[in-house]
Length: 127
Picture 1: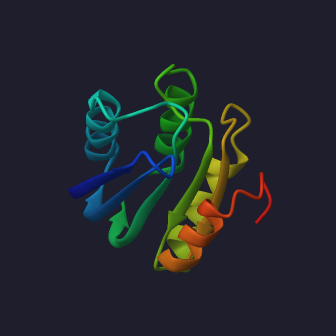
Picture 2: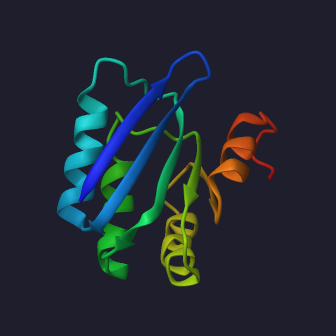
């Protein structure tokens, strides 16, 4: 998996782009590197762009990932825009939105521009 991250502290968010096969191990390593960066703030919102990636996570792995993130004090519980390119990835990532342990507002989009507009709109949890 190839991953990149850019912090936007003036706007209060982080953007991540993922390419290739997204596995639990690869995604977990990337999240840990973001959380370890001195620029990271747990109050940040974020965009994770999966549009150039293949999401190779099982339903159980998504549940485990969501639970582990929800119990980590470094995790952001803000607004998160997830960008995908297929309906199958959309359906898979909807499981983040249904997990009771996740206190974030999560929305899934098919294009990054719309995701950024929603994230920066400051409209509370609407969208």
